[in-house]
Amino acid sequence: MAQQDYFDALAWATRLMTAVRPRHLDARTPCEDFDVRSLMGHLIGTAHRGLATARHLPTREIPHVITDVPDAELAATYGALSTSIREAWSPLAGADEVVPPWGPCTASEAARGFTVETVTRGGDLAVATGQPSDAPNDIADRCLPFADAVIPRGVSYDAPVVVAGAFSTTEQLAHLLGHKRTRTARGSR
Image 1 (spheres, rainbow, N blue to C red):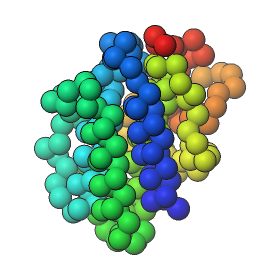
Image 2: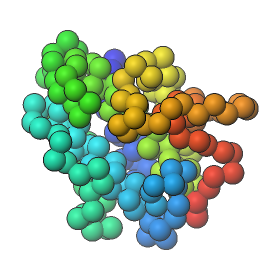
Image 3: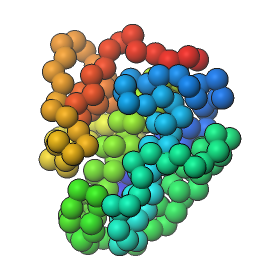
């Protein structure tokens, strides 16, 4: 199930990226570190790290944000990476050991970590571009119980954000990763 959730998260992020228009690229996202263009570059970097992990290659030298992909090719690049990731991860058994950026773990644990990141950043992209921001197929619901255990605090993520109110599961996942969300955070449409 962990790998299928990862594949579903990649497919969702690909659909979100495909819907991004040139007018969106400079829009702010719910994460203050990124505009839409750099967030897409970050998703591409995360996908490269996911692919390298499945292929048992080092991930340390893969940039946090990929900046050398032309704007018109961002979505297609991510889509091609998603296909390659599916092919590379499919033969892995859940108990196989891999080494993602945060250290050795099972393939299932790594897939969960990449799923959490992809769903959270996909939600950021959706909000910034005016798309539905809830991840499909209850992926975020399945991520919540284990997200805190698979994310490296202090390296890539801050302490969880406690916010009052009713939030979607995707928004709750973002809060758990230390990203504050508000109902009014919207980019250009």
